[in-house]
Length: 227
Image (cartoon, rainbow, N blue to C red; front, side, top):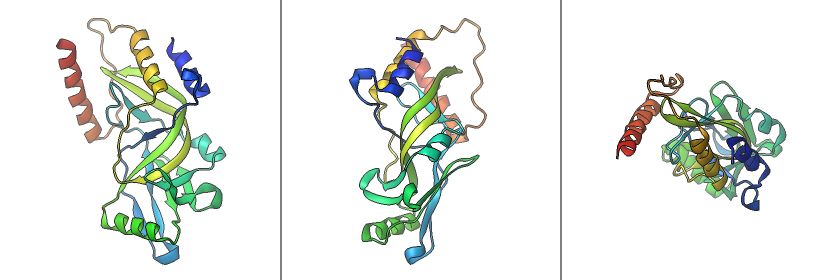
């Protein structure tokens, strides 16, 4: 099975005769903020940031290409949830209580939470700094797999967004079966690196923490290959 065929199956839901699974991702983001009082309070920040590497997703890392959210913001009704739980809706684009903006940094959001006890507790946790991380739920429309140096990087080119979410733990869950199949196909189909071939440079936009993570991951891969 080729990479292109797997990517097509991801989009069409052909693998295992199931609809594509919703994936959840957390990337390093600037802080989220709660501003205002009472019914005028707003929660704002970034749900995702472009050009930063994810954690290791089982042999590969991900990066979001600028503009990946452009089409979904035009066409889809997106929710802001607490911990991805549909019982706790912080805001929604169709009602105007969630505003999402695709800018040069990433996916910016501003939500007007409901005047409920759980939302007031959420705001208190954000202001205390106990809850300051974001995640988002999506399905892949288009992605790209390549080697950069000795790392496998999956670039999210276009996604269908379902929700953004304030999260207690920004976990990096296992990838879906279809994405795992695409990764395995890429591993088997990619040409071997010729001896002495210069590796491709790492994307310059990666922050120092991401670069350090990649260095450590490369060392572990080297040890694994030598063992």
